[in-house]
Image (cartoon, rainbow, N blue to C red; front, side, top):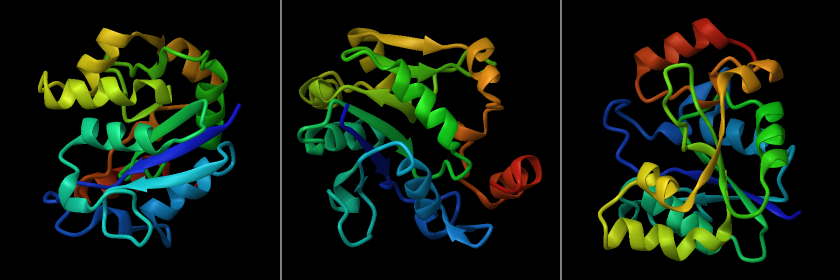
Length: 191
C-alpha cells in the first residue's frame, strides 16, 4: 500500500508569535521531527502551506485544516492512503502512525478519539478519493474536517485501543503556544 504523509503548515501561528514549523523541540524544528517520524512508515512526505521551499500550496492560500487536507489529498497522486498531521504535533510517535495506517481499509478515515471523546482529525489516515468531497465540504458547505468525516465515514480508534500501543495522547498534543510547548516538554520530553 502506497502511503503519503501530509503535514499541514498553514495558518498564522498567532498564539506562538512565530512560524510554528520552525520552532525547535529538543534541537529539531517541529516540521522536521514530524517528517522524520512519518518517514518511518510512509513512502513520501508532502507539506501543505507554510513558507518552506517545496510546499504544495502557498501559506496564504490555506485557510484552515480542511483546506490543507483537501490540497494534500489532491496532491497524493497514486497513493492508497494519506496520513495527515498538523505541523504543531511534534510528539507524534512512529508506532501510532504505523498502527493507524494498518487499520486503514481503503475508504473510511481512521481517527483516534481522545479520552475526552474528541476526534483527533489532525492525526489520522484518509483516502485520497476524498479530495473532491473535502474541497466541496469547505467551499460549498463551509464545513470542517469533523463534518467531513461524519458525512464520509470513519473508524474511531478509542482510548482502550491506542493505550495498548503505549500511546498517551502525545501524538496529537498540539503545541500552538510557548506555554503548550513547555507543558509538552514537561509531560513528554524526549522522543
